[in-house]
Amino acid sequence: MEHGHKLLIVEDDPGLAEMLAHYFRVQGFEVLTTTLGENACSIAWEALPDLIVLDIHLPDISGFEVVRRLQESHRTRNIPIVFLTELTDRMDKRQGLELGVFDYITKPFDVQELRLRIRNTLHRASLRSGKHPITQLPEGEPVHEAVVGMNEDTCLLIAQVHGLNTFRELYGLVARDDVLRVISLMVKNAVAEIGGAGTFCGHIDDTTLLIIAPLHSISQIEARIRERAAESLEYFYPSDNRGSNAQTKNRLRIGMGRIDRLDGPIEDLTFLIQKALPST
Image (cartoon, rainbow, N blue to C red):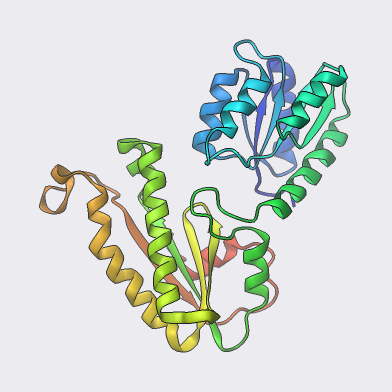
């Protein structure tokens, strides 16, 4: 449950933040930290953590304001938040709960209790959402259930978008999200047009889509996605950075690979990427 989750700790006490970061890294989390609320909003927007541990008292803006700003964006509004604070007043707890904060723990605290609260919050969040914040395609448990439910007449197709980090550095996060949204729609349409009702499309991770389709249609779906990607990806770039004028290395492209057979249970969906696209 905990392995691989991305955790953002927003705590104005550097010593406590360092201790928590070390503890949760040992538990298998990827941990980001900051002491400022403004930075927390920027990091959350860019990194999309799975959960935020957020102090109310921060040097610049309050934790309440951080929550409000995150909820203004479709990209960050569903990130679960656990308030970590010295405040014990009932009104402050009520305000946090009214904002949609998942849990609330006061200092001093037991770090193992915090870990359990985080684990439970991640579980509740996965049950509540189950959709990617940008594309609204299934992710997490619904994807795992679809893979487990495959039969011998279906096949897996993995489609991974390459070059998004470079594209984001050049044109920003909004443009990057637009690319991901359009590509996911392109994939979803190809799957619906060819595979029909017996198909499934969802996310393994932020840039990797998983397609489950009947064996007889999987090759056509792959060819259709490749064709449409070849036609459209260059047009995300401005006119002076296309075709023969292309200047950027690591340009947008889609890597694709098939898995015709699954051997044994799948506990980690990222394993499917390595199996289908071993060179990535």
